[in-house]
Image 1: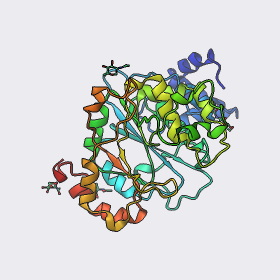
Image 2 (image 1 turned 30 degrees about the vertical axis):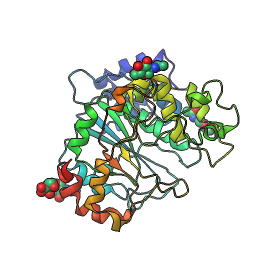
Image 3 (image 1 turned 135 degrees about the horizontal axis):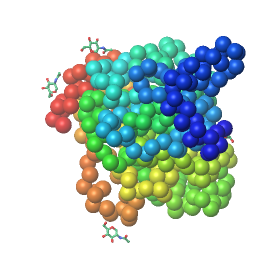
Length: 370
Ligand SMILES: *[C@@H]1O[C@H](CO)[C@@H](O)[C@H](O)[C@H]1NC(C)=O
Ligand SMILES: *[C@@H]1O[C@H](CO)[C@@H](O)[C@H](O)[C@H]1NC(C)=O
Ligand SMILES: *[C@@H]1O[C@H](CO)[C@@H](O)[C@H](O)[C@H]1NC(C)=O
Ligand SMILES: *[C@@H]1O[C@H](CO)[C@@H](O)[C@H](O)[C@H]1NC(C)=O
């Protein structure tokens, strides 16, 4: 681990790349393992800015990420970080491929967290090739899904200082707008999009899932929030997550009750509601239908349901706005009508009909009169 006093020295070293490279060569010749050789292998693209290696160890990863500049470098373009959290091959990879097709790599980055204990066949290719970050096992009913999301955030913060918005995406999620539309919507927002609901059924049970009073004193029941696992956080909030230890320690406890243990749906809304409620639009831009609840899973669209009318209907729905951080009657929230950008869950068999309407509907922003 780097001590705080070593960090500036570390940074200074990276400003001296040419010297470092010479060093690497010399050290490798003498058989000494050097930090520089590790570092030089980590640079993916010779034209991209010089960066230190991204650590694999969580504590160090988060610590370094918590120190990044919360602002964009002046005059630089904003980028979207698409962060895929998966335990399987991405069933909609080819649809995403088409979504990104033709957009400049200067506008986005792709990151994947892939549980290393699972199989990925077919492997990741195209825009997903070599985008898997150092990942750990991630399972439902444990804090490991939220850990994985924090790892993605920290990695994306360290990887590119131009990452401005950080979107968490599930494998069963698809884009329902063009890249251009998604990009414009997100980079022009000064707030994060994260569902923050208060006084939901199960609030007490979810809060007490780690044992009665296990969340105290840091997170009182009244401060506990619920929301979709899928959000888009602005850079400043991504850094809030990377910096947070106090609240995370509470959520990182093992649950004593599995059936009410959903840290990934509680940690982020609770933390951001505590730290900067006014910096959040309290809604998710990933459409989901919970009118059907299949053992904790929302409605899954099967191939025969996937018709243009479905996409148009999803696009035309208004997000559900939760806690506004003030008192639930904030007009800046009541008057909002943010567009859904993504939707879930789609069955893998829906790929074909989705690809079939990609150009005419999915990525056609004028389809359906919206
Ligand atoms: C990307 O777009 C080009 C030009 O429109 C097309 O030829 C190519 O097949 C597309 N690739 C994918 C993966 O959709
Ligand atoms: C979260 O808890 C796990 C299991 O107790 C532990 O190994 C890990 O270090 C914790 N992570 C953080 C970032 O505190
Ligand atoms: C609740 O919000 C409304 C509108 O923003 C405001 O007029 C009112 O004073 C607020 N009430 C409290 C108790 O904060
Ligand atoms: C996009 O949708 C509009 C309105 O439905 C339609 O007129 C147009 O042909 C569509 N564009 C493509 C490329 O299909």
